[in-house]
Image (cartoon, rainbow, N blue to C red; front, top):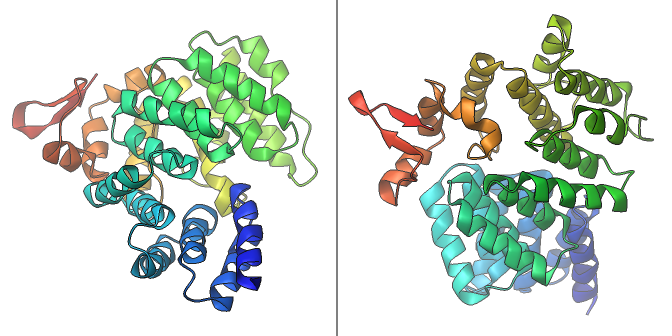
Length: 334
């Protein structure tokens, strides 16, 4: 009973993506090593909170040894394999989870993200929409749905959703940055709206660089950026020592989008290729949105997709309409 109670507390913390989830779920597995749901939830925690994919896969295998049909464990395996860009292996776990329980919001979030990464945009939106009907308060799912909306040329809908999320959580770092992303990718972008609606007062636990980043991105949106502003953004993409590991990805993505908007495409694609070659780091998805139209046409974009393993995945499955092999096997996208 103690193991189950601790597991329930761990699940609640996991839903909020709080680090306490890892501690609680480790306690639950220690209290009852035969309780598969606790191992499965712990695998998701390792994958989504500590971002330790090796540990996530080992833990998911323990859960699957106890229950081969545990959807959370299958999902954790798929998500960890996705981040290590083992696309076909990830898909096999996602497919099995889908056949067992097509109505798990936690699973639908990760599956929609996978589909977005590999360019299956319409499917991504279909599954994220199903998830939103089931649990529209699961924030990771909301973020996956935002991505799916923008990938399907519905950036204004994504902006409206992000605006609602921000109104519900004005003091949360992640919600603010997702709002910034949705705002940047909105083709009907109003520079004044970005400059004045994105919070610029530092949050209680945020250093001053957070405010500086917002101000510099606003300059890019307004068309008033200078060389110093661009250099500032480059210091955040692909990385910056001031960013913590969990938040660094969001910060880097904001800086990257601002650099795309500032037409720094050579720099962005060079760093994209560097980024995707690093171990256990998510590649930057949403390359299929209208926002990235010019970046997709870059001569090195196909190289980026090859190094990310996306081209090999398409060779084994199906190629999208907007990318193709040209002369000398060079991949070109539109």
